[in-house]
Picture 1: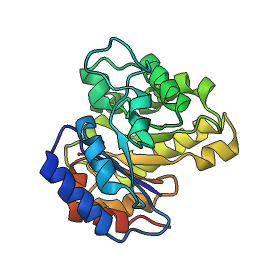
Picture 2: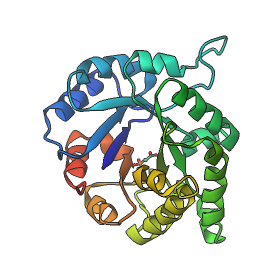
Picture 3: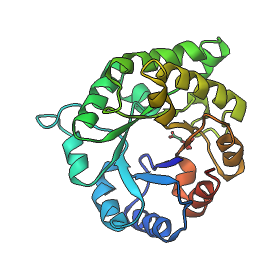
Length: 245
Ligand code: PGA
Protein backbone atom coordinates (compact mmCIF):
# COMPACT_ATOMS: atom_id res chain seq x y z
CA UNK A 1 0.00 0.00 0.00
CA UNK A 2 0.96 3.63 -0.38
CA UNK A 3 0.48 6.43 2.14
CA UNK A 4 1.14 10.01 1.07
CA UNK A 5 1.31 13.04 3.37
CA UNK A 6 0.17 16.32 1.80
CA UNK A 7 1.22 19.05 4.19
CA UNK A 8 -0.22 21.74 1.88
CA UNK A 9 0.97 25.26 2.88
CA UNK A 10 1.50 24.41 6.54
CA UNK A 11 4.46 24.38 8.87
CA UNK A 12 7.87 25.86 9.46
CA UNK A 13 11.39 24.49 9.88
CA UNK A 14 10.68 23.32 13.42
CA UNK A 15 7.55 21.44 12.41
CA UNK A 16 9.25 19.81 9.41
CA UNK A 17 12.09 18.56 11.60
CA UNK A 18 9.77 17.29 14.33
CA UNK A 19 7.55 15.39 11.88
CA UNK A 20 10.45 13.95 9.87
CA UNK A 21 12.17 12.75 13.04
CA UNK A 22 8.95 11.16 14.34
CA UNK A 23 8.30 9.46 10.99
CA UNK A 24 11.90 8.19 10.84
CA UNK A 25 11.64 6.67 14.29
CA UNK A 26 8.25 5.04 13.69
CA UNK A 27 7.85 1.40 12.71
CA UNK A 28 5.88 1.19 9.48
CA UNK A 29 4.29 -1.97 8.02
CA UNK A 30 6.91 -3.74 5.91
CA UNK A 31 5.01 -3.51 2.62
CA UNK A 32 3.85 0.10 3.07
CA UNK A 33 5.48 2.87 1.06
CA UNK A 34 5.32 6.31 2.69
CA UNK A 35 5.84 9.55 0.75
CA UNK A 36 6.04 12.93 2.48
CA UNK A 37 5.11 16.02 0.43
CA UNK A 38 6.13 19.21 2.26
CA UNK A 39 5.79 22.74 0.87
CA UNK A 40 8.46 23.03 -1.85
CA UNK A 41 10.58 25.46 0.18
CA UNK A 42 11.07 22.74 2.80
CA UNK A 43 11.86 19.87 0.41
CA UNK A 44 15.66 20.19 0.86
CA UNK A 45 15.28 20.20 4.64
CA UNK A 46 13.00 17.14 4.61
CA UNK A 47 15.25 15.41 2.07
CA UNK A 48 18.17 15.79 4.45
CA UNK A 49 16.10 14.68 7.45
CA UNK A 50 14.73 11.59 5.67
CA UNK A 51 17.87 10.63 3.75
CA UNK A 52 18.85 7.00 4.35
CA UNK A 53 15.43 6.03 5.77
CA UNK A 54 12.75 3.95 4.04
CA UNK A 55 10.62 7.07 3.67
CA UNK A 56 10.38 8.88 0.34
CA UNK A 57 9.49 12.50 -0.36
CA UNK A 58 7.81 14.45 -3.09
CA UNK A 59 6.30 17.77 -4.08
CA UNK A 60 2.78 19.19 -4.15
CA UNK A 61 3.08 20.75 -7.59
CA UNK A 62 5.44 21.09 -10.56
CA UNK A 63 5.66 23.24 -13.68
CA UNK A 64 5.57 21.51 -17.05
CA UNK A 65 8.66 23.28 -18.44
CA UNK A 66 12.15 22.17 -17.35
CA UNK A 67 13.61 25.65 -16.88
CA UNK A 68 13.03 29.22 -18.01
CA UNK A 69 11.36 32.52 -17.23
CA UNK A 70 8.57 31.23 -14.98
CA UNK A 71 8.84 33.38 -11.87
CA UNK A 72 7.89 31.52 -8.73
CA UNK A 73 7.66 28.06 -10.30
CA UNK A 74 9.56 24.84 -9.59
CA UNK A 75 10.47 22.34 -12.31
CA UNK A 76 10.59 18.56 -12.42
CA UNK A 77 14.42 18.38 -12.76
CA UNK A 78 14.68 20.57 -9.63
CA UNK A 79 12.52 18.11 -7.70
CA UNK A 80 14.66 15.19 -8.84
CA UNK A 81 17.77 17.15 -7.87
CA UNK A 82 16.47 17.04 -4.29
CA UNK A 83 15.61 13.34 -4.42
CA UNK A 84 11.85 13.61 -4.90
CA UNK A 85 10.26 10.43 -6.23
CA UNK A 86 6.64 11.63 -6.51
CA UNK A 87 4.74 14.81 -7.30
CA UNK A 88 1.08 15.62 -6.63
CA UNK A 89 -0.55 16.96 -9.80
CA UNK A 90 -4.04 18.40 -10.30
CA UNK A 91 -5.06 18.68 -6.66
CA UNK A 92 -8.54 20.25 -6.53
CA UNK A 93 -7.11 23.23 -4.64
CA UNK A 94 -4.81 23.88 -7.60
CA UNK A 95 -7.53 23.18 -10.18
CA UNK A 96 -9.81 25.69 -8.40
CA UNK A 97 -7.28 28.32 -7.32
CA UNK A 98 -4.56 28.16 -9.96
CA UNK A 99 -6.44 27.33 -13.17
CA UNK A 100 -4.88 23.88 -13.46
CA UNK A 101 -7.05 22.16 -16.08
CA UNK A 102 -6.97 18.62 -17.45
CA UNK A 103 -4.73 19.61 -20.38
CA UNK A 104 -2.17 21.19 -18.05
CA UNK A 105 -2.33 18.15 -15.77
CA UNK A 106 -1.25 16.05 -18.76
CA UNK A 107 1.63 18.44 -19.55
CA UNK A 108 2.79 18.31 -15.95
CA UNK A 109 2.64 14.50 -15.96
CA UNK A 110 4.75 14.41 -19.14
CA UNK A 111 7.32 16.66 -17.42
CA UNK A 112 7.34 14.36 -14.39
CA UNK A 113 7.75 11.18 -16.45
CA UNK A 114 10.55 12.72 -18.50
CA UNK A 115 12.73 12.79 -15.38
CA UNK A 116 11.45 9.61 -13.72
CA UNK A 117 9.08 11.24 -11.21
CA UNK A 118 5.81 9.43 -10.47
CA UNK A 119 2.78 11.74 -10.72
CA UNK A 120 0.06 11.44 -8.09
CA UNK A 121 -2.88 12.70 -10.13
CA UNK A 122 -5.86 13.91 -8.12
CA UNK A 123 -9.39 13.50 -9.41
CA UNK A 124 -12.70 14.14 -7.70
CA UNK A 125 -16.17 15.57 -8.07
CA UNK A 126 -17.82 18.54 -6.37
CA UNK A 127 -20.81 18.14 -4.07
CA UNK A 128 -22.98 19.59 -6.83
CA UNK A 129 -21.75 17.05 -9.39
CA UNK A 130 -22.41 14.21 -6.94
CA UNK A 131 -25.92 15.51 -6.20
CA UNK A 132 -26.61 15.67 -9.92
CA UNK A 133 -25.44 12.09 -10.42
CA UNK A 134 -22.47 13.25 -12.49
CA UNK A 135 -19.68 11.69 -10.39
CA UNK A 136 -18.70 9.02 -12.93
CA UNK A 137 -18.74 11.51 -15.82
CA UNK A 138 -16.49 13.93 -13.92
CA UNK A 139 -13.98 11.23 -12.99
CA UNK A 140 -13.93 9.79 -16.51
CA UNK A 141 -13.50 13.30 -17.94
CA UNK A 142 -10.47 13.88 -15.71
CA UNK A 143 -8.83 10.55 -16.55
CA UNK A 144 -9.51 10.33 -20.31
CA UNK A 145 -6.95 13.01 -21.36
CA UNK A 146 -4.23 11.01 -19.57
CA UNK A 147 -5.02 7.69 -21.22
CA UNK A 148 -3.00 8.11 -24.47
CA UNK A 149 0.12 8.75 -22.37
CA UNK A 150 -0.09 5.90 -19.86
CA UNK A 151 2.11 2.83 -20.14
CA UNK A 152 4.34 0.74 -17.94
CA UNK A 153 7.08 3.28 -18.69
CA UNK A 154 4.77 6.13 -17.64
CA UNK A 155 3.26 4.87 -14.38
CA UNK A 156 1.16 7.02 -12.09
CA UNK A 157 -0.73 7.03 -8.84
CA UNK A 158 -4.33 8.20 -8.91
CA UNK A 159 -5.84 9.83 -5.83
CA UNK A 160 -9.62 9.95 -5.67
CA UNK A 161 -10.39 13.05 -3.63
CA UNK A 162 -14.04 14.11 -3.64
CA UNK A 163 -13.92 17.89 -3.23
CA UNK A 164 -16.70 17.82 -0.63
CA UNK A 165 -14.60 15.53 1.57
CA UNK A 166 -11.36 17.54 1.57
CA UNK A 167 -10.71 19.25 4.88
CA UNK A 168 -14.37 18.99 5.86
CA UNK A 169 -14.22 16.11 8.33
CA UNK A 170 -16.82 14.39 6.15
CA UNK A 171 -14.98 11.56 4.39
CA UNK A 172 -16.64 9.52 1.66
CA UNK A 173 -18.08 6.29 3.01
CA UNK A 174 -16.02 3.21 2.17
CA UNK A 175 -18.78 2.16 -0.26
CA UNK A 176 -18.87 5.56 -2.01
CA UNK A 177 -15.08 5.52 -2.36
CA UNK A 178 -14.94 1.89 -3.48
CA UNK A 179 -17.44 2.45 -6.27
CA UNK A 180 -15.36 5.32 -7.72
CA UNK A 181 -12.09 3.40 -7.24
CA UNK A 182 -13.58 0.44 -9.13
CA UNK A 183 -14.58 2.80 -11.93
CA UNK A 184 -11.03 4.21 -12.10
CA UNK A 185 -9.57 0.68 -12.11
CA UNK A 186 -11.85 -0.34 -14.96
CA UNK A 187 -10.88 2.78 -16.95
CA UNK A 188 -7.23 1.78 -16.54
CA UNK A 189 -7.86 -1.66 -18.04
CA UNK A 190 -8.03 0.22 -21.38
CA UNK A 191 -4.21 0.24 -21.08
CA UNK A 192 -4.11 -3.40 -19.95
CA UNK A 193 -5.03 -5.56 -16.97
CA UNK A 194 -1.53 -5.53 -15.52
CA UNK A 195 -1.36 -1.74 -15.67
CA UNK A 196 -4.76 -1.40 -13.98
CA UNK A 197 -3.75 -3.84 -11.26
CA UNK A 198 -0.39 -2.26 -10.54
CA UNK A 199 -1.59 1.37 -10.44
CA UNK A 200 -2.11 2.49 -6.84
CA UNK A 201 -5.49 4.20 -6.40
CA UNK A 202 -5.48 6.25 -3.20
CA UNK A 203 -8.42 7.72 -1.37
CA UNK A 204 -8.11 11.28 0.00
CA UNK A 205 -10.48 13.57 1.88
CA UNK A 206 -10.72 13.69 5.68
CA UNK A 207 -8.83 10.43 6.21
CA UNK A 208 -8.21 9.99 9.93
CA UNK A 209 -7.45 7.22 12.39
CA UNK A 210 -11.16 6.63 13.00
CA UNK A 211 -12.09 5.95 9.36
CA UNK A 212 -8.86 4.64 7.81
CA UNK A 213 -9.35 0.93 8.53
CA UNK A 214 -12.80 0.75 6.96
CA UNK A 215 -11.57 2.60 3.85
CA UNK A 216 -8.47 0.39 3.57
CA UNK A 217 -10.67 -2.73 3.82
CA UNK A 218 -12.12 -1.94 0.38
CA UNK A 219 -10.64 -4.03 -2.43
CA UNK A 220 -9.75 -1.12 -4.74
CA UNK A 221 -8.41 1.29 -2.11
CA UNK A 222 -4.62 0.97 -2.18
CA UNK A 223 -3.77 3.62 0.38
CA UNK A 224 -4.44 7.26 1.17
CA UNK A 225 -3.48 10.84 0.42
CA UNK A 226 -3.69 12.50 3.82
CA UNK A 227 -3.86 16.24 4.45
CA UNK A 228 -4.76 17.45 7.94
CA UNK A 229 -4.02 14.18 9.75
CA UNK A 230 -0.51 14.05 8.25
CA UNK A 231 0.43 17.15 10.27
CA UNK A 232 0.00 15.18 13.48
CA UNK A 233 2.79 12.60 13.80
CA UNK A 234 0.84 10.20 15.97
CA UNK A 235 -2.24 10.22 13.71
CA UNK A 236 -0.26 9.72 10.52
CA UNK A 237 1.78 6.88 12.03
CA UNK A 238 -1.41 5.22 13.29
CA UNK A 239 -3.02 5.54 9.86
CA UNK A 240 0.10 3.84 8.46
CA UNK A 241 -0.27 1.00 10.95
CA UNK A 242 -3.82 0.42 9.64
CA UNK A 243 -2.67 -0.12 6.06
CA UNK A 244 -3.51 -3.67 5.10
CA UNK A 245 -0.99 -6.03 3.54
P1 PGA B 1 -7.58 16.33 4.16
O1 PGA B 1 -6.89 16.71 2.76
O2 PGA B 1 -7.03 14.99 4.57
O3 PGA B 1 -7.18 17.42 5.09
O4 PGA B 1 -9.06 16.27 3.90
C1 PGA B 1 -6.61 15.74 1.79
C2 PGA B 1 -6.01 16.38 0.57
O5 PGA B 1 -6.48 17.47 0.17
O6 PGA B 1 -5.07 15.84 -0.02
